[in-house]
Image (cartoon, rainbow, N blue to C red; front, side, top):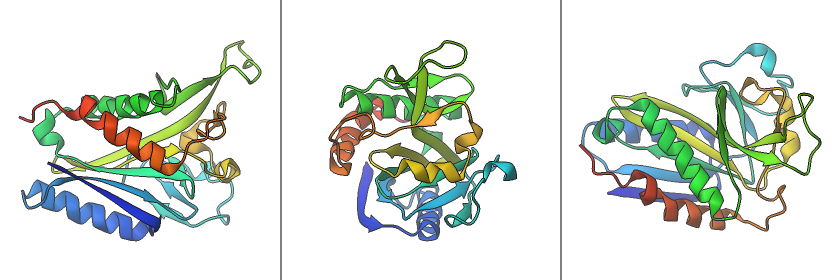
Length: 219
């Protein structure tokens, strides 16, 4: 069984990390169920294990939290659905790459619920959407913006941290960092794409698509 928790209001980032670490330890010990936790945070930046100091371009803008997840700098804030994923990867195949691919597929299927086509790009972490409404890039390719970020950590084969999906955040807040170290592409959201979508709609889509990706029998 996977427990789903939805927390209203803004969740303190430090408290979220404490909860995830404790829950992951309990899952590893067989003392708690796996958990998907849906939250929103107040505006903040997090620095993953690969973060570069020069990618924090406005260090005084919002609080900056060092994070043990993989990846570089990312933004969390109002209007963004953060999905903390505490699953026993050890019982789901002991395959980290496959697990990340499952997370990517989960986001893509959820976006399809709103007729948005998400893409995975080699060398660019996260989920991307093509922007035919924007000018072509310097190389003549279709412009692409990031709509979801993925960054996880495993401890004793249990995952924590997870996914953030841009529903209706203030996109200007991303300008205080180089998101995930990528400068040549932008950031978008479901509302920025012209969709009248709220947080509850995204939650329903995530729950509906979860079993399509993670229903494989555990070892």
